[in-house]
Amino acid sequence: MKMSVDTLKKLGQKKYRSEYGCFIAEGEHLVQELIAAAVHKPALLASQLYCTADYHGPKGALQCHELSSAQMAKVCETKTPQGIFAVVPIDALLKNASPIAMERVFYLYEVQDPGNLGTILRSLAWFGASRCLLSPASVDPFNAKVVRASMGAIFHVPIETEVTLQELRERYSRLASLDMHGTPVADPSFAGFDAYVFGNEARGLPEGLHTSVFSIRGSGAIESLNLATVVNICAYELAR
Image 1 (cartoon, rainbow, N blue to C red):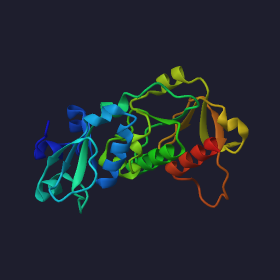
Image 2: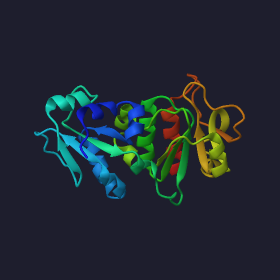
Image 3: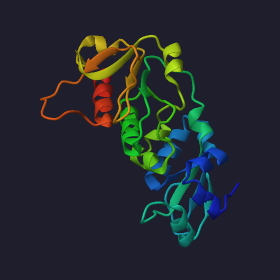
């Protein structure tokens, strides 16, 4: 069913994404990744495209509605819209299949930066066999900045939201986290855990969370690494 331009514009806000149960993936690259992911996730075929009359790129099997260039500009957040975006049902991504064999679980506690989350999803998609769990009070993964930064990885990585620390402990008995003073991640033991826990960019993890602690060795010239960089290094080590 075609949405009005005013409704589409509202999807830029989390409360309306929750109300309507969908989000916008803007631009040709994201649409192509959506079409590719729909091969393995048929629920994504419920997505709908909106494009201008002069857009002639791939549309797959998705239903497409036409907008004027002025309407496209009103909905899109980028300064120079590419003439196409998709409205994607959130449930198609949150209702994931059962965990696959050898799946690696990455739990992000109150991650706030949309660019960090998008970059993390992109890395997890690259290495594959990864699931991303987000705690309450984390940035909305369907925020437009997250979606763009993921470069389409959001369609390929299983995501779960509102996963509390208590639920994490109930589901996974062996947890690992990162700190400045722990066993190097290059140690073979790093690969033997059920889930890997990463803290908020500024505050880290709450006290009392019992995990095995690992660290990424550096020169000591600076105090810390960016969260996305830490997750990327860990994902690489686990894949290696």
